[in-house]
Image (cartoon, rainbow, N blue to C red; front, side):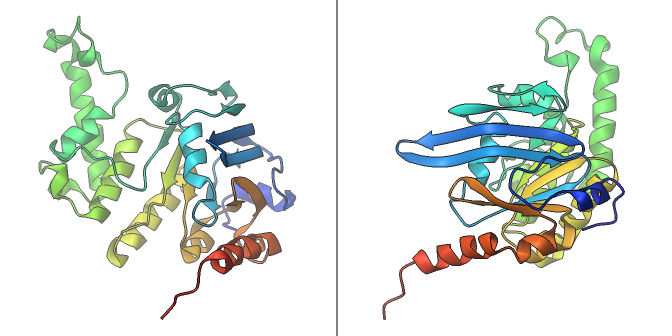
Length: 281
């Protein structure tokens, strides 16, 4: 566990699924999501501690991304409810969730390839006066805000080392650069919490360390981070708390070192391997 002063409060928290946290930002209760006869998510209770990095792990098909989709408004739950910073978010559309300060990225990046990197960034800014029909033709009314948006976009592109690609089409970026752009674009919303779905997937080793530094920097600046990841070296290296899912449910929670030794976590991963058919020569 890191020495972040807020995350140290987790040292006294019980290591059990659904445990209550001292200062939860996100609280999920009784959420289920089914597809036909398959229950993809069945989470009784999940709390994400404010100001920490929480990793969500589990074998493929455990329900991690589905849970992300439900919480962030990209899918609908069958039952349950969840709150964010004390406000009800249950059933809200994705853009309304983002306005409340909860944003997410995707395993497969959603950059707009035929827009420039800067244009991708500008689209994410909130409360743009120029987007309103009545004000769109009155450039003097919103040009000051536009300059501020461009200034913030340039600051973030500099931070994520994408300034040299500012005016290039997003479609020309490498896979790793698209991950960086998606994270930078999410920060244009000025969120309280960011959810990252497999941020290291498809990223070359040269950019992996850069992404890790960006994630820990967000936490150190007071933001809450929750991310899905399969690379246990990454999970062990930057997480304050780890939640393990298997077959749609949470089977373990705790600090990285504790979860890595938890029999339920070992069984979840080994069980998936044992269920796979053997290769036949």
